Image (cartoon, rainbow, N blue to C red; front, side, top):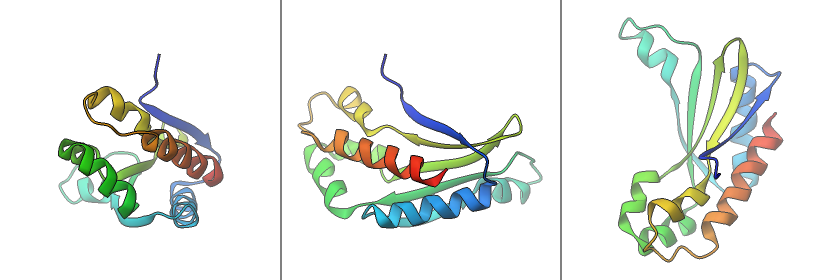
Length: 128
């Protein structure tokens, strides 16, 4: 069975792990677009959750290629890696782009989903 996500645990706190993810993203040739501090945003609305950072990033050439294959792939863009706490543990998690072939079977995405999948796994592994 194909896993939708690639998730690891880390002994780092959310802030340190998030910083390492951002550094690994840059080293991999991607650009961090934004970091959503979901805990902070929900706190402003009077809601409480454990820390959760959503780091959005992209590579323009890769994004262009998948958008040319099927504009609906934009629903899965930009790539995201989440850093969060659950049950007292810190996790680093990313969606696996190889699932795009299942969501968009008519699109000719070639080897790009597999290449980006490998890059995301490497980014996550380097961040722990």
